[in-house]
Image 1 (spheres, rainbow, N blue to C red):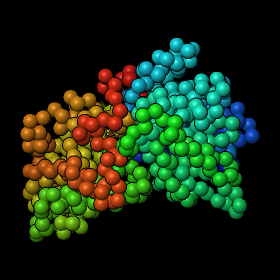
Image 2: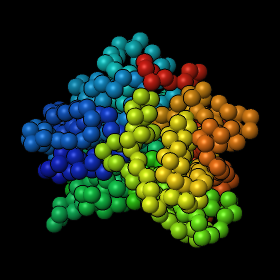
Image 3: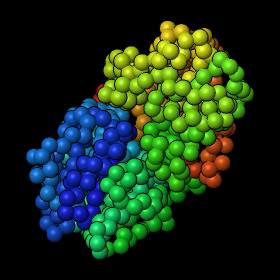
Image 4: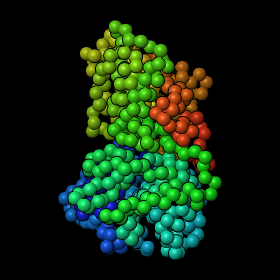
Length: 477
Ligand code: SF4
């Protein structure tokens, strides 16, 4: 998973980009980068890439001159976490800069074709492949829109991307709209600048007004002080899909709760998940029960659970914020982080029947640590309430769900919920049903058929690669 951010038509574009990336930090903590240019000097680029979280120095800001900037935060789903694989990518002939979020599934095939035509690659990163593919087509006389249409037809999977070429910023998205991408506008007097972000929280932080989501198979072209121009490429797509495939896991876990993605409020979505889960469990308030979240991504679902059930809501686990997200850490880091990340509030927990709401169980090890932690803090019973269905299949579109052999709901196939309950040592374990997840989408006015649930039901919206990417040597963001 990654985050992209773009600014077009603002003298301090890099500074706005840095602020936007701060608010997309939850989408990637391993590397970040920014590239700037001027619309009247479109072949000159200033690029920085760094390891770790977004932290720009004064020197970086001085270097990053320009009125167009694009930026990227990276969470490597495969391939090495090095700076060659970090984004944005720059191509010098023709001069363009590019960054994207999402994984493509036919990376090897497309790369082989391009390599036979003499295209050189410095990394195993999907973004580099896409940038070089577009450069190759533009160099052979295609317009950027024609090049994007051809690329959309030939690469499969997820990409929400920003291209800058000849002083214009092009934001576009794959035909299924798997990953989110939105745009907004900031006005100072009569001067308009345009902002593109993976989520609306990136717009909020720089006081840009959210305009709308970029549609699947749409390209929106931005120029300073001009209204954006939209190109709907769906009629140029071969075999267009009947439905979109928005990643439901973005709404459950990945996006920030204040964001609007896929035209849904993430906050309202998570609150409803909690309410549906509480109804599904059929529990009522009593004198000894409390409900709480595994902070932070489950906070809103726990609130919905509390409001529906009437069980008092308590902050029973306090999170240490400098440890980062456990889901996007390596295996060794994850073990260590789970131990350091949470501290229980003993005075709240002691003697209580605890309902602890979490958004998902992936490997089960973090959940077991949390259950043990609550029991050690004196909980009478620990009831684990998961606001998503079991994750049983890998993701090929940019979220690092591991191989099936590592997924606990996949490993423990027979009577798996009971076996997982035993493994995590909870007194009760309940997952939200897939039907209630779909009911949540319906209740918010959308069609579940426009969402991807493949990591839960195994129904992938594209062909999948024969291999499952491993954390070493694969490709990805
Ligand atoms: S497989 Fe799961 S994580 Fe991947 S895009 Fe689909 S819903 Fe999202």
